Image (cartoon, rainbow, N blue to C red; front, side, top):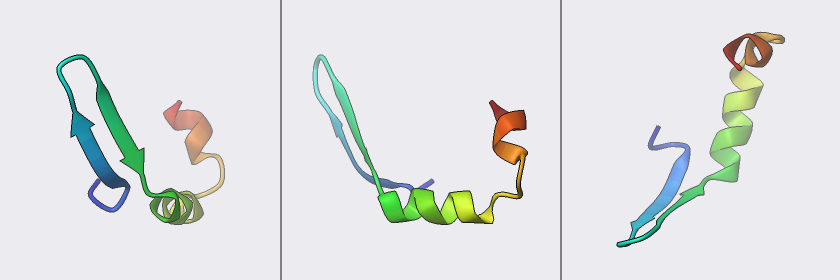
Length: 40
């Protein structure tokens, strides 16, 4: 999970999560075809 999240800011009335685009791209490349449809 740490490879996907760049930063998390927690406020009294909000939660802001910044994701790493390169981490998401790498994750998608490692997923076999069709796996995303079954997970959703």
